[in-house]
Image 1 (cartoon, helix red, strand yellow):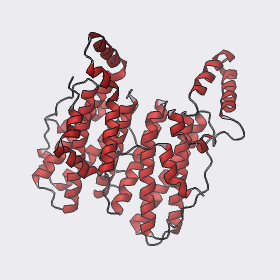
Image 2: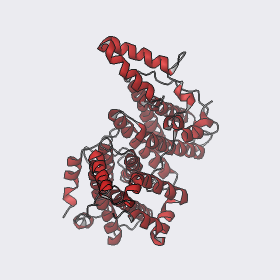
Image 3: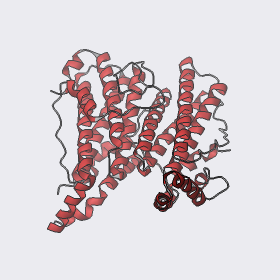
Length: 211
Length: 234
């Protein structure tokens, strides 16, 4: 199943605390039924359950988790990394602000779709803030991973509006990645086609930071 | 049906070598993977040219493929334009700085890869790739390096906005995956050029309507994009 390959079990449970996904959907559907009439509820349940946990809310919560990670990364970097130039510090703050906005937008979208936004994970970036070099290297990894994650998830998104939102965010992640790479004297766009990644691959990459 | 362009690219030693040199082995495999996947559905039909199969093809085309082919041809036109621009700029010798020249060369090669891949994908879907538009970049190049770099940045920002604006209309998920993998590369190019020009990472103050103003990028519709590139068409 595409969804079981791409939706990590630990993330699938994030938005449904103390209940199962099925129970959550049924509850949401009954609420919808109360508004639109009970008869409209049944097809919705069938359709929602058929998605097998791989719906847009799960994808958005996966993206939200990544954005929490990036936002927190730059927040701590701004406070901790020594030896950044004025321009580099300015950029780090700008990227932090962007990621904060992504967090807010994704959380709002999850709510709008009737889901519960994923909680911010507790994070540990190890020695990433020890110096300028380690900060930039980790930033490079995170931004490139962000691009791959959104590109991998994009085709799985069902709502055109959610796809548009994800697209408008991934373009910014790609721009971030290019700038961090330029600072590191690396090619800003090393590949002619950015590689999409599955959620599993991304989770493996960010696992060291989830404390 | 001529569906062999991608395979030609894959089989031709010189273009494959160029491809691998640019992208690194794993990247090249992955990019081909995306595009071959985008084309995979047609393989069986191509081998059977019975009337029934032709009917199937027609049905398939009505079912969204026609729209996707049109979008791919629109993207191809933009990529032709970008590739041609970088080629002309390099040929003109106007870029003296080694670092800037390396970036322009690399970006130009990448745009050519996009051209090749889009053409092959269109053919695979049973469509006919548009031919390269006639361009007039000479005036731009004559105006000097700053104008050249500004134009490059504008065109890349426009390209990113164009892919973003078109993504929601793509029906075939594999074509969407391919378009997304190009979209973020255009964004990387745009950001790097914005940076070179001191426009800030989002490119504030550049071409109106195509540049992200803050944390979210804006897509642009096809008519606006085509109007914006019109000055470059002969």
